[in-house]
Length: 305
Image (cartoon, rainbow, N blue to C red; front, top):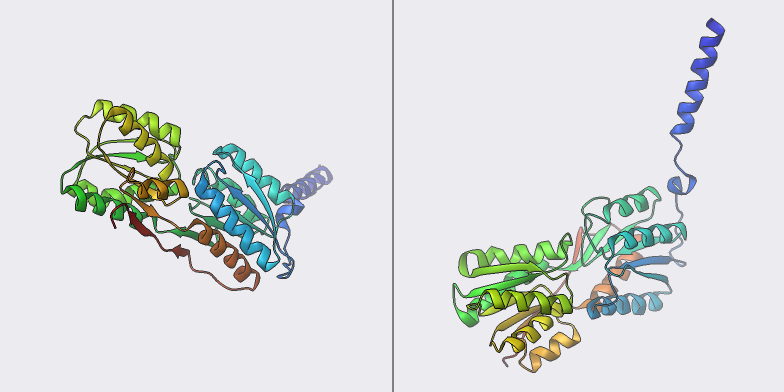
C-alpha cells in the first residue's frame, strides 16, 4: 500500500506540474530589435473617415521610422476584433496598437498580449482591463465640455438639447458624454439621448425619431461628425433649424461647418494621433517609460468667422 501511495503522490505532483505549464508562445520573453520592428494595428472600423486618417498617420510615421505595419479592420465588431488581435499575436508582432470597438470586450485580448509579452498601446479609446503602455488620444471629456459651452454661448442656458451617443461600451462614448453632461446637466435641458453607434445612417434615423418626439429641441450634440451629418439630414427633412455640434473634425464634418450646415465640430487631429502612437512604439523599443496618456490637442471649429 505504501508503494502505491508513493507512486500516486508522485504521479499527482508530475501532473500538477504539467497543468501549470502555459503555452510556449504565451511565456516567450521577447528580445526586441529596435531597428527591426513589426507592429500589429487593430482599428475599430475603416468605414469611418476619422479612423482612416488615424491609419494613414500610423503608416506615414512607420514608413519614416522603418517599421513594418500589419493592419486589421474590426468592422465595428468586437468579436472580430478579438480574433484579429489573436491572429496578430500568432504572427509574432513586436507591439500592438489597438483602437477598441468596445473598451470592455477588448480586455481579454489585451491580457492575451500581456501574457505573450507584447506591449499594447491604446489609440483613441482605452481598454478597461489589461496592461496598456499608454493611451494616445484627445481629451474626450474636455471636448464634451467644449460642445456644451458652445451651445450655451449660442442659445443660452436651459436650451433644449438632444444628444446622439456613440457605440455603447466605447470609452470615447463614455468620456465625451461625461464631459458634456458635467456642464449640460445644470446649464442645459437635455431632453433626449440615444445611441447611434458613431454611424451616419443611424444618426439620421435616431435624429429623425428624436425630432419627431421632441418638437422643442433647438440643438443636437452628436458625439462624432458622422452622426452629426446624419442629424443634419434629419433636421433638413423635418424643416427644422437646429444647431448641430459634432466631434472629430473629419473632412465631411469640416465641410459641413464651412457651409453652415453644422454649427461646429470639436476637431481632433487623427493623423497626429497615429503619428504619436508610432512615436510611442519607438520610445518603448528604446526602453523608455511613457506617460499613462499622451494627449493630442482639440480645437473648436465653428461656422462663424
